[in-house]
Length: 373
Image (cartoon, rainbow, N blue to C red; front, side, top):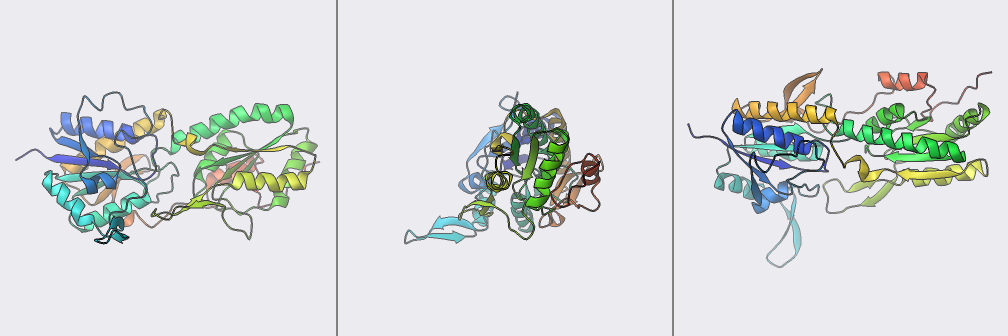
């Protein structure tokens, strides 16, 4: 039996842990199974242009801890709806997936391992439907994939938010300021909730719980009455006021996910300053892509290593059309057909951490503050 040739690509936004998966997958496939590996650059774009590099023990050494991806990434390239030029030079959208499949056959690729979030794994499912031997690995700092308990990248992002809040506490207290910290997460509040609790935030605003300005002001005044003359507010980029809509930073027309959220911290700062008057200075802080960068946390390195090792096992056992997942601390797999189209969000009524936060006196901006005598 000829040894297998495995291809790898990373799609969507970068996340700490991508390199750790590549590192572990490469070492396991080579050392345990004797496979050959290549990596397509810039996600699905590289699969379309046939731009790849060999993955060896030598060129993957020392990448376990590094954020980003040595294969680079792209969040705009859907090969089932790809921008190309027609014979007249006009830009049109076209299904070019057959070109990608032809490239895989040309290079003698037996299986394709795809690291990505919902959008990337949707295309992975579609390639599996067309007969490509696909194994998926879940990646997103937002932790919003419903088919796995955790995605790698999330823990690192929470650590970065927690550290930032620790630094902001001292300056907020020194100047009696209200500081509004905007974090990522899109339409799910996991980063805000976990980071807010770990970083001792006073107010946590998440997409799943609409807030009112009056309730936030009440929380600030309640803290003032106890001599706590500063307030830390963590707001997820997808949070919204009761009866309002999300705050959109811009529209990226050539992206499969064109709506880019952002700007809620500045908007909320402006609103609170008007209501508070001279009581407090209010300052916005947008953590942005710092949540994606730097070194990968130990937890995410280990989770990524478990995912990479198990993905190699799935390829060896030819369990194609599936995605690696974490199920109650056990590494398992789930069909790609069940992965996409179902976003995991916080349930305010049943999620334990929402109750924990409320027990700590954290306001979600949805309830009036009851002042204790």
